Length: 474
Image 1 (spheres, rainbow, N blue to C red):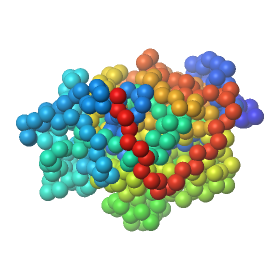
Image 2 (cartoon, one colour; image 1 turned 45 degrees about the vertical axis):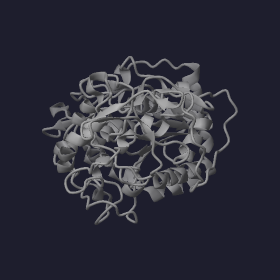
Image 3 (spheres, helix red, strand yellow; image 1 turned 90 degrees about the horizontal axis):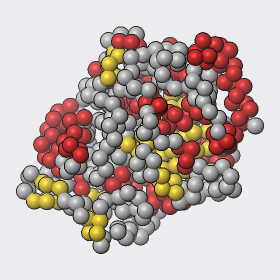
Image 4 (cartoon, rainbow, N blue to C red; image 1 turned 60 degrees about the vertical axis):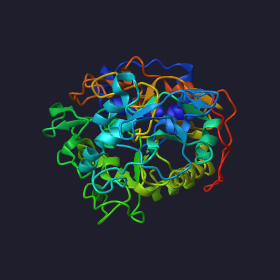
């Protein structure tokens, strides 16, 4: 049984780390958690870029979407450029500009809970954004060009993203998934693997302090110049003998500048995944544990999924061209994601897998839900998120409050006997302000599964689907 093998690994890890394991809190193993440990051997986290929940699922039936009355949005945001009010609208364009999305922009967008600053942020902060990130594809001449109707107010439905809507109909859609960081891509990716974004003055994990602007002294999308010294979840996975891989774009998808940190993989020249979406090579834990070899090209994922050799935990970061990051095509990204999911579904390990598809930050696109504040770092704005598994509840919309910290909690509950990234007992103390997995408001991903049901068959979709029907907003 999968659960028996897993407990042997946990016990072996505890023998090696008796002090750590003896101090770890005792996790209550409920019948549902026991079933999850028995059924799920592979957790796959597919990370896409820069879309808000309302932008992708704001008109999905039953979801907490764009406020509507008789199919007409009841919200309208001021545009200081044109001095008019702009409502959310259906955007048929598959290439979007989006808006700036730093910590400052998040504050402008949220505007004290009024959620009406998205156009203002675009008009007033794009110059600062493009100065920091001159290589961002939406920056032209040092700014984001003004449009008659800013597409930060646009929304898509099954006409543009039919496969994503099909996954939402057949599996689980989460309509209160907030990015963990109140900021942009790098902090968000850091939270995904470590529940923190910080800047450190040395390799001492106690030297780190929260930083959502330039963690690791990052500048303009370039490599961090100081290490990520705090503890990440791969440290715990390694110590407990749990397999993991972080998959990045291969060299045939050369969309980015030369990336020395990513080239620790042994490549020379360019890679498809920018450093800011691939933070693990800069973690001292990964370097000291000699785990850089676990950061591999996406070809390895396809091969493992086909052969039935997937690790226990997989993260998949896209190359730029298929990331859905503005200004890259929504349909190209959907085709890439569909290929990933189809490969798992056709492989021998579909029956023991759970795929978590989510977007790293809101990308400046409108969302109407006020983020929950749990500490000085977040939560950030709402993003789309799906759970795809033979054990996922069919057609279920999860209204729990979630963040990317829930992914770490799920990994820890299934594979680490509930050990958290907690300085008090994880064996490697750091100075993080919050044990994010233990925040009281955080929901439980177990709610998205039914392990008593007959396993769901694969839903293999066309990689290049025809447009779906228009949504019928309420």
